[in-house]
Image 1: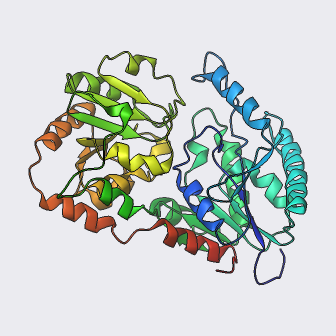
Image 2: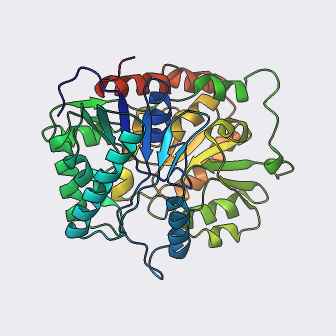
Amino acid sequence: MQNSKNCDGVIHFGNVDWWYHNRGHASVRMATRIAKHVPTVWINSIGMRMPVPGKTEIAWSRYWRKIKSLTKGLKRDPVSGMYIYSPIFIPRYSPTMLQVNGWLLNLQVKIVCRRLKIKHPSALVSMPTMTPAVERGKWIKVVSDRCDDFSTLPEADKKQVGALEKRLLEISDTAAYVHEGLMKREQELVKESVLIGHGVDFDQFVAARPIEGQRIAIPQSMLGLPRPIVGFYGGMDEYRMDSELMIKIARHINPGTLVLIGPKQMDLSKVLAEKNTRHIAQISPEELAAHAAHFNVGIIPFLQNEFNVMCNPTKLKEYLALGYPTVTMKLPAFQAYKELIYNADSHEEFLACIDKALQEDDSSLIESRRNAVAGSSWDTVATKVAKLLAVSL
């Protein structure tokens, strides 16, 4: 570790690929805000598992999009000013190849830092497979962004990923958590634990769906859709989303519309075969409020699996800021808001909750939902993390 008081750049070892994943992810929201204070480089994810045709959903599509990402090299986002780097790596995840990729990635980070004149970087690490690279670097501070328990990711090597997560915690100065349960489980493994939670662009979402007055204009992609509109937005992965439940929802609300917004990271063909399902491709975080404001009910149809037990979706606070009813599968992260949402423990309960949500007629709930998240802010979250990274604000 360096002994300098402040860093002059942040290297964010990301958990998504900027060029094709959902940019609404909490890690991206933090990174783009930190970039306002100090040069910040987002290193696109190198993943944790090899797509296997016939086993992994849309495997060939995943190969192709990663190849396209690799051709972009180092680019600068004109909006946030953050640098995006697509590293060259060997797509194998054995212990030996992870070490090789660590050496290769560390070399590329050094070159990027030299090019951007970053001499005293701090590291923010959101992906455990980046650990071998982080171990080789010299940092002012290392902060582990514990947004998920990746050892539970299907098709990943649980023992190997768990060991990488443990190594990362050991070399980190601080681990920043969005899930209290995960923080409590790991607090003995790291020097310092901080619960940062999630933010929300509160004013933007409230303005899109005011209690009184005209709602924001409906986007062209949603014009004329039969109501009620029951909607979800965000990344859609096979280990998160319950496709069987989504099919049941579409059939249950027919002739209403099930709207799904975001990149297709799983096989949605059976869901989209339902004639009243509409898929809208990935949109920017700035466009989310304008689309979601026209849902009658927001949904989070997640699987109740080992991975999701430790998740904390950013969209819940956004749904609450919009004020309308939200239906979720019962997961620990939602319990703090159980009086404000509809929680289900089965497919049948989920459908019944949608019916209750559509019949809701209590305007005071809108205010209660908004009050529950009014103090949340991505700027506040990013400032907390920036301080942990020794960024001078």
